[in-house]
Image (cartoon, rainbow, N blue to C red; front, top):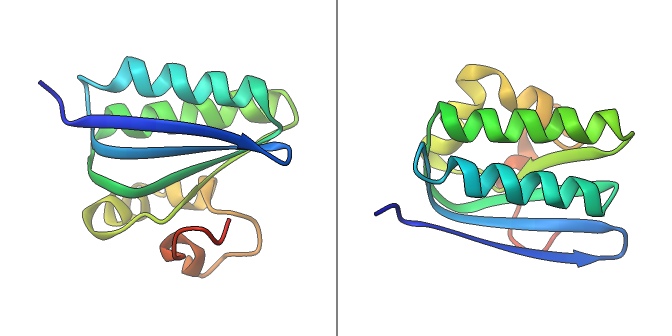
Length: 117
């Protein structure tokens, strides 16, 4: 059984999806569905990865496909609070460059304390 949880909150024209646990093949469908639903409900989606311990290619695919869906609707999806190996995976694959909030070219916002978004 996968250790995976997510919580979604919509406020002030944006949706924040807080993800926890392991984003892998077992959680792929639930993560993909939640992200696409968020993209349909708000023009800005923030994905908080502060509680994610593991992210594989399935999780990366869910993030990138939701980002592409957001762009097709003239919206945005950004990732914040990635830490440790999750941040490393995002950096090595280059996905952080795609999903980093605007104006954060140095990646400093990838480690922003919770609540600043």
